[in-house]
Structures are given as structure tokens and as C-alpha cells.
Amino acid sequence: NLSKLVAQDVQLFLSLLADLFPDESSPPKGHYPKEEAILKNVVKRHQLMYHDSWVLKVKQFYETTKVRHGIMLVGPSGGGKSCIFKCLKETLQESDGIQYKDVRFNP
Picture 1 (tube, rainbow, N blue to C red):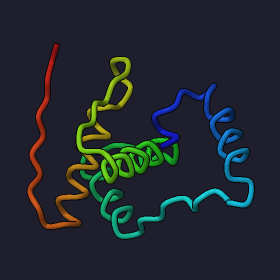
Picture 2: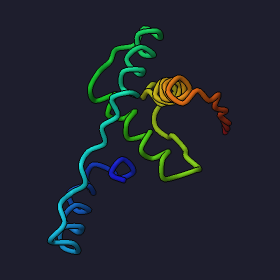
Picture 3: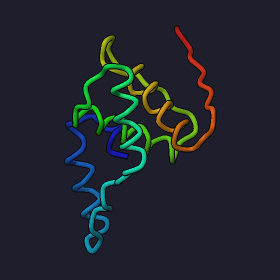
């Protein structure tokens, strides 16, 4: 998961993968047309901007939820963590028809 690496380590990680698996190409980027369409509506409902780099963060978070069951969002105040979480949660609730619960810990 590249989303868990700091920017300086991404190139090193990709280089290591290429050395270990020289005949393999990188996996294709995830494409989620149904979820992206719902996300556009959720973003509009919350009066947020549908910005490509922000949407990429939502997709990375979504992909992380597919392979992990315990997730922490950390970062500076005002970095968009709560909005990313809230919008993804609402998107998946509409997409899957399931009411999701979240647990927040405030240190």
C-alpha cells in the first residue's frame, strides 16, 4: 500500500519491488466507477470541492479498508482526515446499503 509510505520512500519501495519481481508489471490502479459517482454526490451534499488529489486520498483510504481491519487516520489539524472518513463512510453506506459504525478515540 503506497498510501502508507512517506513520499520519500515510494521510489525506493518501487525500486525494491522491481528488483524482486523483474518480470512483473505494477498492478493497475483501482477503478471504482459506482463509488466515485456516489462520492461526487456526497461531496456536493457536504458543499466540499471534488478535487482530484483529495479523491485520490479517499480511494487510497478505501483500498486500505479492503486489506486492513484496524485503521488510524493521523495527520495535522485541518488536513481533511474527518472529511475523507465521513465522505467514504457515507459513500459505502449508499453503495452497499449497510449502516456502518465508527469508533473514535480522542487522546
